[in-house]
Length: 507
Image 1 (spheres, rainbow, N blue to C red):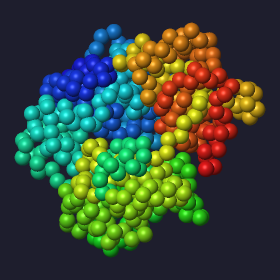
Image 2 (cartoon, rainbow, N blue to C red):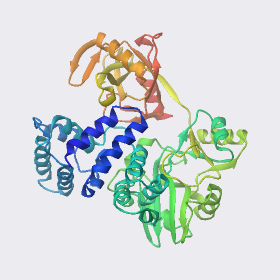
Image 3 (cartoon, rainbow, N blue to C red):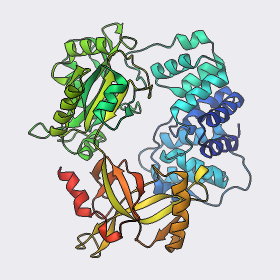
Image 4 (tube, helix red, strand yellow):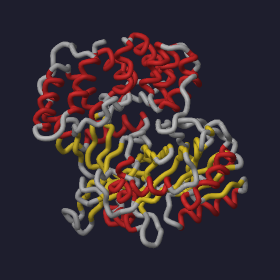
């Protein structure tokens, strides 16, 4: 199949907010795919190609972009093969080889295909084709029971492979996919609630556990062989020898554990998230030690626990995890749950997770079985620039460049603004149209894809915190920033300062 057909579908999916319309478009594409293209196509649509990361960044991608082809000619197979070539390059001369492969690939692509390829390679494809929508589309295209497709995708950890099996195999083939120690499972995720009381009302009796500001890990042990996977199912065993050692000390032979790992200070308090991620992403051993904390068990010594209620899984976990069990308490009492939350915050953690004691383990967000509650921090920042949107937001200014006030000029001009991050999250259609008109009136200079504006507009931004970052002059970047609303009642001089935001690192 021509890559152009895949790109057209991705554009159609990105241009609508309707989940049903997204699913219909994806299902139509899946039905037309040659079986040989299915796995690659699913990887491209989710910006997670089967080759994984192939060593291409913004700079390399931008340098490779030349004049686009006039007509579509690339196939899905061509893009898949090119990514295979990029993955295989290493050692002396690999940079030149990578640049040559990228130039050959992009010169054969139309302008729209170039944009799509960049999104795939950089993991920034904003189509709305999330795993859940795509899984539903697979079930529709293959005419298979949705729950059977979801379960096979969860247990195999491979949506592309599941799509191929669903489209070319039988229901019995899907049903035969089981839990295998050593093969990662798609993780269960949590919804959010504004308060512990709201969350407990939704879950009923729950395990109320500390919400750690760490990195999600899934650990598989088969005898003396231990493998550790990330939230995205990447194998990072070689980076975490201390976690391997901890799991080998547990009184089991075979086990699959779900949890988090984070760095601790000498006083036992959690270190900043950035330190954990810096250590977590290191190829070589570093001095920072990561401590594992486990909150679920999916298999132990020949017994699958996925379909057992959480109350049973917790009992098993407590019998094997020892000091590596995440702190928490099972309760239906709002006061007890609130106390666990206060204790978690006092210990320096993010908040709490509430998990219904009768719930089984299911990939993704499934109703209100798992709910996270953590304080929301809001700050008033100044809009410095805005990027033109794509897909459904084409023709509208979308991604905001955010600045904090620098009253004393510690990081630049006194009274100026220091950029601390970007966000396009939380913008309603009404806000998108309003800010497009507003910022075109305030434009001071345009650049490719971006409108720079007078720094006079204050916007309230919710964040989960900040992290150290060399990307911005102030040395920090916002975490999970989203728009709460514009503050027309405030002037730019009333914005929060870079020093206030940097203070979050210390706290």
